[in-house]
Length: 369
Image (tube, rainbow, N blue to C red; front, side):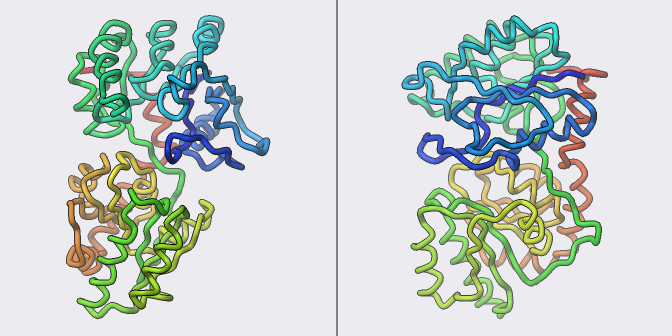
């Protein structure tokens, strides 16, 4: 099967500014494309040229980097506009069996909906209006443009929150959820847990790293667990401030800042940890949460991430605002239950499983609501 994946934004950025990176091989969409190729599908990925890596990488599929137009109005990190995409779709529409685009609120999805409506699946991540310009453009888009020009493609939500949101606009919404998935898999040797926890996050204010260190300190003090460590994978402008906080609170050697960790090494930290902490104030979809669960490691998170709902429903951890040391204690004391639940759920998060679900939509589409 020949598949076109249109995903302009390859990775998240800070302050709406795209910075060049050396590699994109660990990004979610590239990992997904590789899984399609592994199942013998021909893939072409369309992305914004701003996200082209510094180094040329060998790739198992074709990547087309399109220039962004009117960038002062349509920021490539928020709402990229590629005028060349429309002509590309018209020229090659007979070549592709399936088009997968990201988000209803997207020029890419609009162009695909107009040119190739019956072949297009829109993979919806957002579960509320985009806040850009006080939500006015997004409200017009969903209530007017989407209803008029995007009512034929099938829309697949990535979370229950996104599904409820997009269903309110009377579009064709697939009845099941297909999440991001994870390209991390359980080690063949199984899970061997250590007395440690993990945080995977950029060291920026919105991640609330210090608040999680504070709760960790209360846990090891209240429950006499000073032999438990907290590893923090990630880097960012708050690193010095966090290091000073760790030192001032006598947590040297117990709270370990790892910096940026490659995916292969991150697998070991995830699989060895009793729990992953999250207390982000803005991240709606955190791939790290799915990666953690796929490696048998439960989650403690606030309710900001969209995944909080299915974490709670499937007992994959604790999802509540203002979680504290008693919630950590609950996970540790009942670790066998939570870890087993994560391991049972893990196959549903594999990228191979995600690919199969997209292909099955074409073979036997279930009713859309």
